[in-house]
Length: 198
Image (cartoon, rainbow, N blue to C red):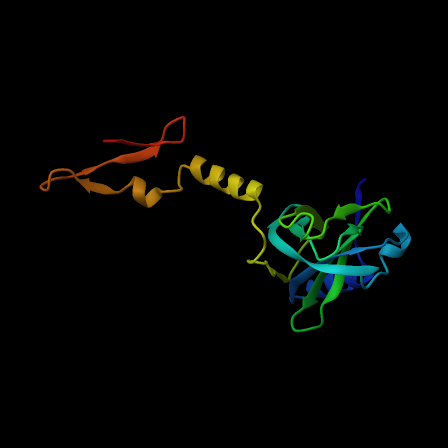
């Protein structure tokens, strides 16, 4: 199974107006079941059958456009995930479906029920291919999204490997004997244990 993505016709209209200096805000994402032909994807203004709101975890500018990280969680009942939609608005206008991603088969990704897998999370990365030639881009990030074990482990690893994670502490001073203050260096050994040298 693979995913196909398009900027919709309404999305292209928003992007054309955005380049005149307006603010484009990506407001939400949603997941659903059902599919349409590839040719019909461009004309969609809604999902075939929307099942849930999807969390936008992060947004990163790339040379091709904007890369979004989405998270789909377990719902009351299970369903096959076939479509993911991204909505955006210009300034204070109404939100419209700007991008649509769809699986190439009806089987899709099986999203389990909360009863079956309470902590289930499916992560999807979608690239919105466009270039900004004059407008401002904002993305509404969901701060209440479920933090997966993998995401937390990756964040801890990145933090521990960063040479600037504790810059203030590394450059601190310690009073060893009550009279003199000496500089010390704090770091990690190969096993991730704090070490102090002076």
